[in-house]
Image (cartoon, rainbow, N blue to C red; front, top):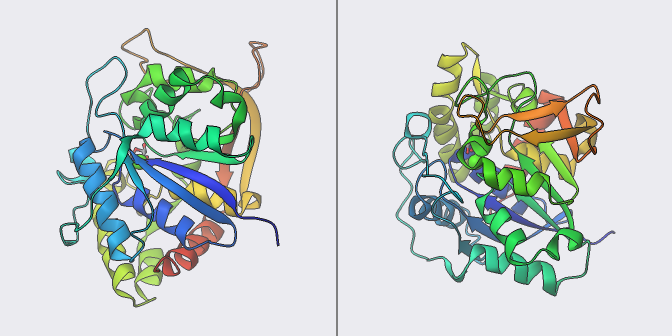
Length: 316
Ligand code: RIB
Ligand code: CA
């Protein structure tokens, strides 16, 4: 059996983030979760850290270290998303206040430490939040760019348009300068944009299937995901809300359920109209380097089956 792949997940939990790191924990033969790093995003840094602690305590997996990172973007004010995720980011089900705390150490420093301490090409970062921590780690120690195996990030969009502005998806919109650093870093990048995640909907049938597992944590996530889908499903008149972030883990577990294309991606940082837009050179017209493996489609039924199967196994 091959050694599990070592990953670090950078996160700003709303429920889709939590499902991402819990399905990683439910896949011990394939993935080893070295650490979770939190960042200001959907809600404040303090709240994303509380939500991360709550999710790990819900499934009894409190041995995973959590390191707190940046509370705001590199050069801009933090824009949270209470209209989507509620004020706590975990609306829909009351989880008990966490007993534990984050570990000491600043997330970007801990990312550098883990990457420099482990074998080259042995650590993958799954980035499911604004990219501030990742950019700071690359600035602190540029050598990690050649040591990282891959960055798998949920963010951006090609022809789907944005979910914050007509041009930009939230994770890139919040810190476009950080995204520019990451996409120009030379690290192998797999990007999962809205074009893909908007096909991965938490429909009633899928949520009922999840609830039918019958354990307390699946009941909790049934309610959390039911709340989490309201904003997008109403805005886009869909029969469910996109389950964005677990696509990064599903890609590591079953890449075959996705369709991919190598493209150049550049980030718009200068114009307020297109702030955070991921400009995807689908037809290779710029001649710029193919810096991104972009996943543009998925088998949504296979994706949701995998999510339910591995989420059910997340308990320690
Ligand atoms: O645009 C979707 C992204 O924004 C996801 O990571 C979701 O968790 C929110 O952070
Ligand atoms: Ca997220």
